[in-house]
Amino acid sequence: MMSIIRLQKARIDTVSLQKSHTRLGVLRLDALHPVISGNKWFKLQYYLSEAVATGKKWIVTYGGAYSNHIVAAAAAARAYGLQSAGIIRGEAPSQLSPTLQEAAGYGMQLHFSTRADYKQQLPPALLSGPVRDYYFIHEGGYGTQGARGASNILAIEGVSGYNQIVAAVGTGTMLAGLAMGAGENQSVTGIPVLKNNHSLQAEINALLQPGQQKKFRLIPDYHFGGYAKYNEELLRFMNKWYHTTGIPSDFVYTGKLFYAVQDLIVNNYFQSSDSILVIHSGGLQGNRSLPKGKLIF
Ligand SMILES: *Cc1c(COP(=O)(O)O)cnc(C)c1O
Image (cartoon, rainbow, N blue to C red; front, top):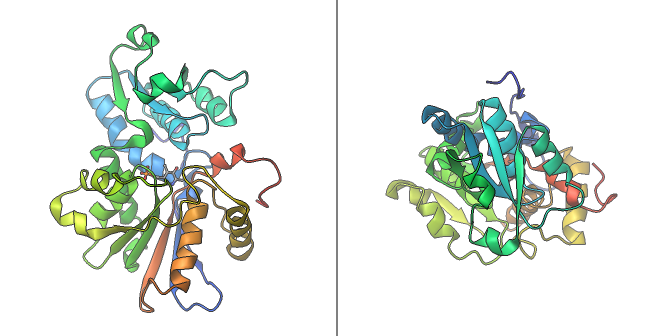
């Protein structure tokens, strides 16, 4: 399976922040692969094995033109010997985004869907043609199997030495997985990148057993205006963070996450005895949608 997609090992980088004695590590899932961001790879594995086990030839999923999930699903499907179709939000563009070109390069069939159709998640007529018997994966990989896959993130060597786990939150699937995988002494903090998603807590809880639901906490103050929204302050922070730590981030997820972690440390959210592990969930390819020259990495 890994013959097509060659994954590197994840590692933990230790980071020291100015005037802080906090023990801070960054789990570099971005180092797994330049395009298939680490958390997506973890989230997709059980879906794809289920698709194979149930004899499906195709997977179908949804996403936007710069979606980390779309490109990861395309690559992972190929690695599992499955065909893939992506239903892409919006009208077909005159030129494909780099993300979609990459997805198409992994063999994904792209079907564009108007925003209105997309909202209702209507499978376009095409899907009733060649792609009949398919395995469906929700947008962003939301679901129990996705969370189970993400729980394996905490089985990576070295992770058990940290008692505070912090991660960015989109659909909440990864966070649910982290809550599933957390040990007795570990607590999980999530930084949502969407604004006013009031059902998020419930959506995460829906993926968990009752005992696991107490393991996480969401801090909704770092969305910078909402999904994929950014300002100059965020970009300045990302450049500074790269300059001091050597760790690149993306403006949709991990830039907001590192900003939040630094702010939370400054505001004594953590205890001095805590050791904090920040999950770098990848997604760097998404920076290609920014205007050129904004980032120094
Ligand atoms: C998709 C994604 C997330 C969010 O994962 P969810 O399971 O949807 O919450 C976080 N970081 C990166 C880089 C992502 O691509």
